[in-house]
Length: 355
Image (cartoon, rainbow, N blue to C red):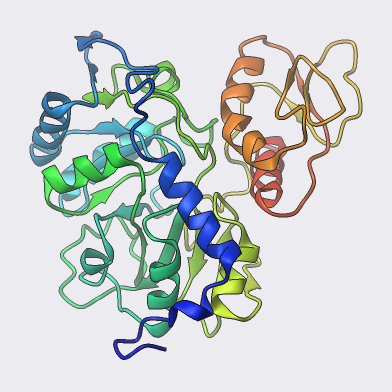
């Protein structure tokens, strides 16, 4: 460890560094097509659609300060943001999503210094934050004294889930707002997560104040959640950062939660679900089904014809939305259960679970 508790740089493997660099590069504004997927400022009946420019960022921050709900893009999925210190605003998240009140929310902050204000920091937190923040990693820590967060954010637990997003637009919103933002995925509770502004509007239009349209989310699955409020680091939810990279950073394997209690987002048995029934590990579709393919198994849509798990993760929710619109049961081809495949399979198992 370094003199301030930070890991020495030679403890971080080249593969870990390259993954962190990849995520951060994906989250920078595109010079070639910076307005891809961005619509003009307009209003639906109740929900404003904001551009990711200075006016849109300022409007989003103003709405958050007034207790409003704003869907914002991150590198993982769109998050439904509210002031994490305003109990009435956080209650609106639960109402808009139809979310069970026992399911805690992730608090998004601009940097690790902000995170230290809300969670009790540790050497393990420092190692992981240094290696992977900003990025698709959430750390669950004991609540810090005088944290000031609404108890609804933590669902009454003595811990808090904290994340520093990498997407430039999300960072701009956090810095313009100037405080912590509670932001679960911007979709009705238990349904497919939103990776575009249109997905948000399809599920929440009229229930929220605005959506900031930053185009498609580059990672495409939610963050990996690691519990550091256990005797050992524990995987609470697989996500956009491979577990293998986390274990390499820590120099040890991590435990996996048994799911007996809800202590972090994304742990409900039925979650991320389309309206249609989902059948897993299908090599072909039944006559009444549509097929989500992977690699050589072709279907109505294919997560990645080349078998690239990064591409598959980025396409997952968008393809599920498209297939669900066909109003037929969805069969899904097998996906390898390593790297980002672990997160993809976690989402698919929950989507297929009994409801």
